[in-house]
Amino acid sequence: MFQDFEDGADKAQGALRIERLRGLLERHDLAAFLVPRADEHMGEYVPPSAERLKWLTGFSGSAGLAVIGRRKAALFVDGRYTLQAGTQVDTDTLEIVQVPNTSAGDWMARTFAAGDIVGYDPWLHTTRAVATLEEKLSGRGIKLKPVSRNLVDTIWGRERPAPPTAPVIVQPLDLAGLAAEAKIVDLQKALKEAGQEAAILTLPDSIAWLLNIRGGDVKHNPTALAFAILHVNGKPELFIDRRKLGAEAKAHLGAIARLRSPEELAERVKALREQKRKVRLDEDWAAHWFRRTLGTSNRNVVHGRDLCILPKARKNAAEIKGARAAHERDGAAVVRYLAWLDREAPSGKLDEITAVKKLEDCRAETQALKEISFDTISGSGPNGAIVHYRVTTSTNRRLRSGELFLVDSGGQFQDGTTDITRTVAIGAPTREMRERFTLVLKGHIAIATLRFPKGTTGQHIDAFARRALWEHGLDFDHGTGHGVGSYLSVHEGPQSISRAGAAPLEPGMIVSNEPGYYKTGAYGIRLENLELVTEATAIDGGERPMMAFETLTLAPFDRRLVDKRLMTPIEIAWLDAYHARVLKIIGPHLGPEDRAWLAAATAAIG
Image (cartoon, rainbow, N blue to C red; front, side):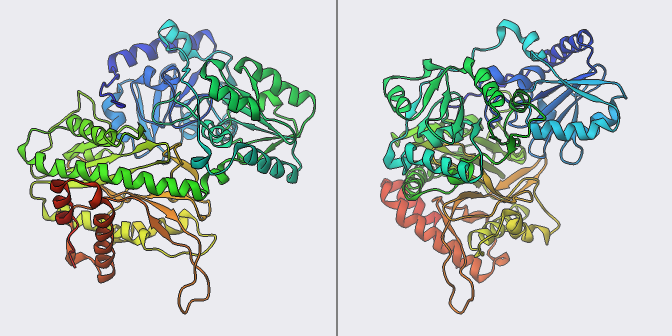
């Protein structure tokens, strides 16, 4: 199994550990210390050695920040995690605060006094985040102070896991679509045009994409933890633990990069400063340590987006071909799973963990599964209302008749990354369930059928997914869609469909389409497909070419939850056409029993 079901959270241990941390605050003359859910690379997934927030508080979500003061402490999470946080941490010790309603800076500004000093680890906060906090706190006379050794590491001690050393593999050229040498040359041209001499790369998926390598240092995200310096001329420098490099990887990387140990990084960054090189640094993603080492007043340091992010997001022809193949393979596995679920769930014997294991088995049967792309969200009844619910042995519950079951999952295949959510009825659904499922489906179809001009951003289209819900006084507290990588991170920027999605959507980008609705304590609904942004084409009688979405995901929606009376003829036609396409493509991959189930599940409703 790629997923475990242990909670790991211990509220009592969390309270004791926070008390130990408070003891260090007095010793270091600090009013508080910041504990983010982050590692030195600022990735969504972190290795066990960097799970400081989870170890200290018990909270296991993928985003969060704890502010531990001598008397008061708070955990800051977004709307995805408020319910989860309440079940995992000692709320007598930690106040749970939802962002962006209240920011950590606002809370600290009213909690601490003038002259107080708040400590932080410059390896675990970006320059942008530090600047934002300083702006909030300076007006109240509160100072931020970097610490040389993380205080959590001090109390964690020998129990802290060792850093990962998973082997690096080479991504074949027929899947990558472009040789690493060509990618390096393209980025060097961009550096030269910008008048810059070097760029520091800190994101593992950027380095993996640039050098056509993959790894396994963090679960679900096939990257190797490393840093790189791209020079305007010559080979880039790659700072990586050589224990990760077998013969093939060493030969591949040795031909395109200068291999250095992680211990050499500080010296090489200082050399850039001393040589007065003009250095590009993405201060939205890079750890603040880099800016401090280069010199906070150094005018030769230029803030600029990581050069890999945009070309990585624009999938080339080989990556698009791989994505289609991966989704067809994954679709067959998901359909076999849904058919099994429909047969077995009425017995009342299935639980959330059994459902997760079966889904992973179905994917593994493809003989191509490398990993899952994230911990499967397997939410029965009220657990489905927890947006990023992770089932554990302590939360596991049965799939019960009269309830909804939400399953959000994905696979990592060497030719593509998948992510799909389906919500299904166990037994007979209520009228309210069918209504709200249909409203979510209408929002999903609104995105899937959208035509839009060049320059359109996720901010422009997010409301299309919400309109049907808004008309009924309903909404959901997460973005409508996120970018997806090519055998890389399942959450990839810069593209997204959300209120914060400021990046223009471009051909070749892959983005999720996942509106939802969540009734706390009752059920959750989310319907997710992945969409490929297509080239702009003319519309008959139109004046401007328009881009569109090609739906990559191939699996049926639960027709039992569709209230046809709430749908327009265009929406019904889309659903029937999508289901016909699913049957045509996935049907040949199935055995007779599952093929018959799919034929019934995709029957036209029009």
